[in-house]
Image 1 (cartoon, rainbow, N blue to C red):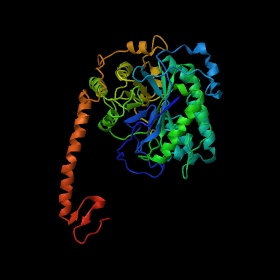
Image 2: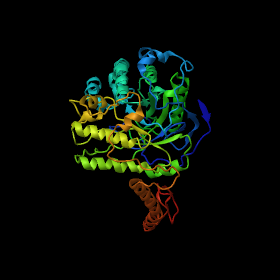
Image 3: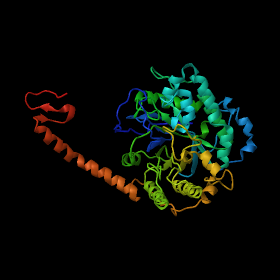
Image 4: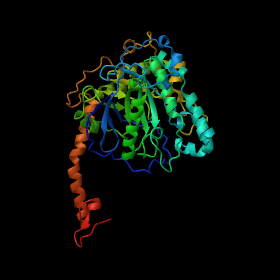
Length: 476
């Protein structure tokens, strides 16, 4: 594991409202959030600076030997061994290898909508997230959570995923697993890292790789636990995560650390940032969460497939490669034939770049259904879709390249990728850049208009800097 020099400085602060330090608010029932940056090596906090460390993690190739030959049962105990006791896996190259991944949502960080009946049964209808769940359970919280961690993801699950062509696991993690909590944070920290280490053993035995998704940063951007903007504690968190990886026997299968969520469509902003901070091999990867056919649910199949193809061209000229770290089959169409074609079309299109990670392994139907999907909860659940026959499976286990060749390609051949920092060639991407440039060009005109209006009230300046012409005093 090599330590590199700092890579960059992020100059712009995100335009997100402040929330109490880590304190959840009454939740909005949105399930996922689009747009994030995944950090490989150079680790970027959602604050104002890049953390002054960079790590190159050794990862994988496209070859996946049969796990039976390695003794899968032994992998269950392998988490107790030291960092020098296992041969490192080959490096994962995000410019070459293709991710076919699964999110392990609602495992080490709770999301009520994904198992709402269980959640409400344990914590009541007025608990919304792990914060309020822990408070509601009181002294029984640790035991209840321990049972959940031990059963929500098992080695049988990981084996089924391997058989279905999955080569990457994305694991949402809360900050409280790695750094001390501060009052009034109620989070339980007991054996989560033991469970994480055991999962790494299962993945290692199958040549599967892991993205550590810091789904919960200290201090919330939006009142929900998958965000945060406490820069000092976020820096501390990322260092703690890197230290944990460095001492793990499975450091070589951690292909990336994904840090935080950026609300809204920030494509133009990140394009400019990435163009000046790209490296070879890549230490910076752009991620997107395109929930095509949903938000709201759509029923026009032709239009849905057209959206895939249009979206697929968006990243063709992006300065760094792209990983789709969340996507699903949720649409207004509940039909196995459509779902299977939809799965293949998306998986194949996202493989034009670095691949994709489906949301999620398991999502349970709900009788309560306050936050849960009332119509087609199963379309978020890989497990259920696999049982329905909606998921294509490889003919040759462990061969991702061959698997992708077997999929239908409704969007045709992939576009030519250009990483020279020129303007994006895709229609959607070009429009995003043009809109951003047009908005930027309007700022001086808008400023002059506001200043002119202020002068009518005897003010000079805008906002907190506004003063009366006479007498001179600051307006509060």
